Image 1 (spheres, rainbow, N blue to C red):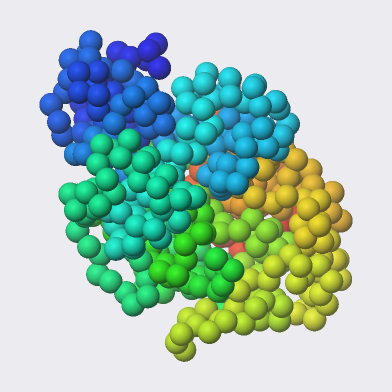
Image 2: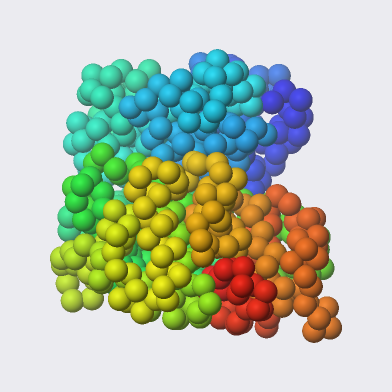
Length: 506
């Protein structure tokens, strides 16, 4: 990152919070690396090195600062790199791809050689895949030490370490203190406890339009599986081979959300945290996105009013794909009703621990592959499409996960009879977290882009959105939410769209 050194140093000197997490600074005279918002005195330029990610700073021999806590910084945009392969690899690592596999195994999934993958990581991030994965484990362990009272052995296990000895060695090497010493010195203010749960704090960059996020998720919450109540999102989940629940609340004064999750979850705890980050799009940099999108007069007013809009993600891409198919040719409310029937009929019943909580897990692919889905009130074609989707996912023919190639997933989805371009694009945008995905055939998008009441064609809509790259998905959300046309999210579709199997249930 040397070529950008002067620019980064200016950002460091300004302590502008908008740069928090976009780079890290290593101070050669102290051996410490910090966030650009660190309250410590600004070091001299000649004593500073800049890094794209925490793992690169640690690889260079720097230790994390105890004041600004680099591991608590919001997600680092630089980690997406300029390489699609590196970006996909990072997504797979975030899903635990290196927990029980080698770098060569990861490279095979990406269709490249192990040596080439290591070269790409070194070029774009300055750190190896193994270093990135270890940094992820280390900082998650630090988070658990700071924010929970879990025993050391359980912290080590939840963070992906294979032994308590290895855990102790790595923590001491990284932070210069034992895990016990870290917990005593840096324990943060406790969150009010809830029986049987741990509470984790997940930071984001302000502003965050929390009301818009909950409105969107609430309209689409699958009855019996998800709830949005009193400013809180709650859902059932299958973690550590058992049913459990998660709850999420916003703490705007802290620029964090609080996640409540069962203390019994260990092996899947880090995965659950990553899923919550994706659902609520916590890695977005809203100021950078807003600055880019407001250049277009069509979006300027919406961006000025709601700069904190995020793209709602998905807990599980398969679940979202089923929901998208259910929503074809029906309203949002109708799709929500069908999703609730599907969960009740084919999902696993669970004990909610109360009269108002979730009652079912969303059905797995194996449960839907051969099910009589038409019984919930679906037309034959859509029922067949869901069964075929479930069969392909169950048999491994169509991998559906955050880290999979969006192009391959798109091709796999549209090859299913009854699944059109809109559905595949919607899954890519929300289920695979593609920030540049656009829905040119969506009726709400075309209405918002209409000129004197004349709807643009999908090709014309796509041409308009070219200047929004690489944030076209956020442009879609602004169109949906930004005006009278955008608020008509349950509006009907054109006949051409219906024939192509595109949905309108956003």
